Length: 231
Image 1: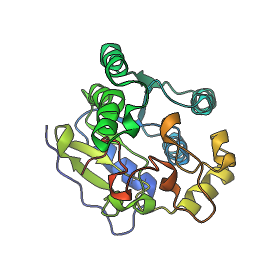
Image 2: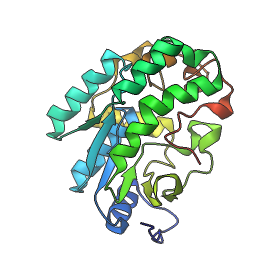
Image 3: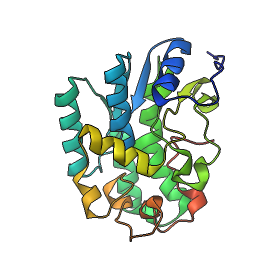
Image 4: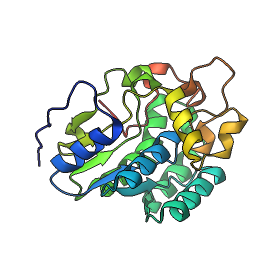
């Protein structure tokens, strides 16, 4: 079902964007949570504002232990329920039997195949029945996100609302908010990681490097999306 985008003032807070999106959505709204600083910030903002926001997470089968620790902390601190979605086991088994455990490093097509099995297909199931979904994406994160809007129609997922409440925040603003509110954070951040995904596809970055440099570091910047946020 298609939605009409509400008109937002030129300068909106993250909570105002969240509330407008939730109000406009024709059905429940959930946050796609990877337990990043951005996602934990959104959970806290929604909790403080009393917004009715669900949370789901995609367990690719290759997440870091530290990511699960954050998930556990979030569950206990905010008393929230997280809906976990896993890839189809038969698809993962076939991929690893036929191409091995690290085929995603051999070509862009192979990497897209792995992301499609472990992330995109589970996302489709997670979004079923929702009126909208919330992301922690920010415009400055990468060249693929420079035209990000606070509210969008997600044409690739049936035209449901896609809500990006932190689209205008800088990394410094996110870090400052997390520190002020003493929110749960991933221990890998203190080891030089600044963008954390699956363990084999994530590494620390050097001082001064762009945060997304540590994701799929063998690929060009314009290719660094997993398929969840195709535009």
